[in-house]
Image (cartoon, rainbow, N blue to C red; front, top):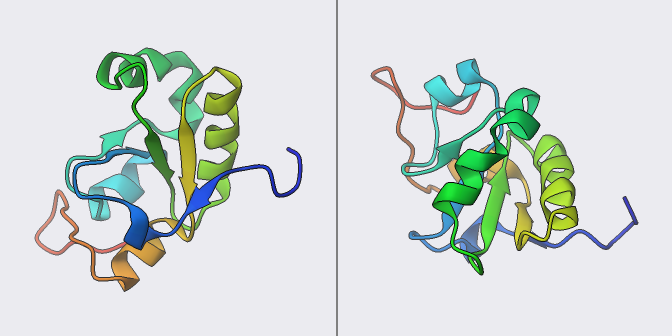
Length: 113
């Protein structure tokens, strides 16, 4: 990855109707996530990329998230190489939670794992 070339946004810049892609693993996803996000774990991403392309419009920006931003940066880079308008969400789900953005979960209490 070329230093400084990966587009990033902070959580405040992500609109409530944006296409969010969460690349965390299943246990992290179940504990707490942004409502409406598409979940494709990084470990399964290349095999399941069709799920994203089915959901995203041709010119739709994809906001990629993980826990803190490392895995999502790698997926963002891959998507951009495929011609997808993807940006990394700086700080990931930890920043999302800290900013008071809504979370949902499979259990009773949503939290970022």
